[in-house]
Structures are given as structure tokens and as C-alpha cells.
Image (tube, rainbow, N blue to C red; front, side):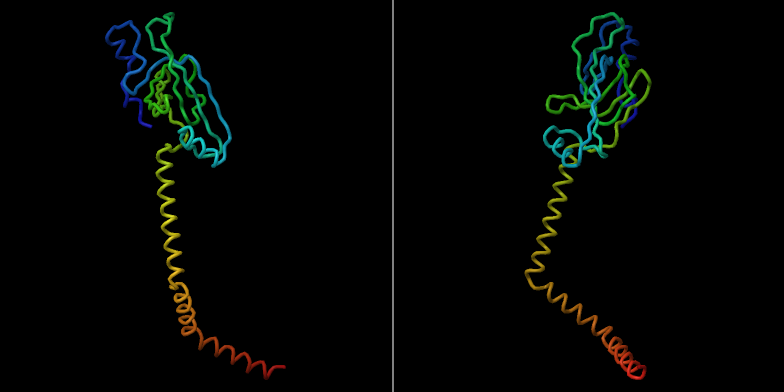
Amino acid sequence: MSSENSMSNPVAECEALGNSVQTPLVHGDIVSGRVVEVVAQQSIQNASGKWVALVADGKPYEFGTQTHKTTLFVEPITSFSNDVAAQQRALVVFGDISGSVAKGHIVQAKVKERNGTLVVQELNNLTTHSSIQPAAQASGATILIVGAVLLLALLFIGWQVFDFVASGALVSALVGLIRSLFDAFGPALLSIGLLFLLVRSFVK
């Protein structure tokens, strides 16, 4: 994940302008706000369960046995703590970020809307001045593309093997291999066999 410098800081911009109004919560694909609630979920899923979640829910494929999902409820940042918060937004973070964000922290996230859900791609905690990176995971699109390529490769290899066997080339190759081995090692094996029988005839 890129560092926090890659995204503008709406808090600093607001203070620099001497502006006491609410900082916009959403600015393009950047969401900034104060965390009012953190809801963390984790579950144990096998590979098949992860594939189902990938295809059905668009959830990124997480490596490991546990899957993590954290929902951050944020409200616009205001210069007065007793101001009434505007509409909250729910940001979904896939991966383990336990202990990295708490209620009251100010965060800034780069998000991507997926099936009506704001999924966090990059997350900066402006309160602790840290860039938060979830556990290693691959996007759904990447997994599907790689899976499709591997499936096509396996089908191609299977077809080539079937065509090779059906054409009789496999039998010819095996016969040629046996003949080559016999030509290379046949005389030596025959000599060893004769020598063994000769020695055995004298030793009783």
C-alpha cells in the first residue's frame, strides 16, 4: 500500500484555509472522516468457501485459514467536537487490521465501490500518522483471470496428450525407447548374465 503522502490531507487543508465548516466526507475516490464505530468479523474458511465468497460476494481471496472483514463507520470531520455529525459512511476493509484503528481516530481511505459497498484499497490513520496495510490478498478479478488462464492451459495440455496417444505416437515412442535401451545396455546385461551362470556352475 502506498504511503499516506499519496493522498491529500483534507484536515490540514481545512485548517490552512481557516475554515470551520465540515470537511467533505467524500472527495472523488477518497473518503476522510472520524471513526465512530469499528465492527470486526473473522471466520475460518477453506479454499472452496473462499472461492464461493469470491464469486458470490466479490470478496478478495485472502491467503491463510482465517478471513477478516472490518467495517469502519465514519462521519465528516468538523472543527467543533460537539457538532452534529452528518450522514455516516461505512467503509469495508478486507484483511486483518486489528488494533490499527479505534473509535475517534481520523482516517483517510482510497475506496472502490463494489456492489454498493465502499471497499477500502488504501487506508491511512491520520491520528497515529500510520499507513495501514491488511494481510496479503488478491483481488477477485486477479484470481478469476489467473484461474481462467490455468484452466485453459490444463485443457490445452490435456488435448495435446489425448491427440498424442490417439495418433499412436506414444506406442511408437515407447517401442523406440525400449529399443534404444536394449541397444545401449543389452550386450552388457547379456554378458553379466552369462558370467553369473558360469560362476554358478562351478560353485555348488
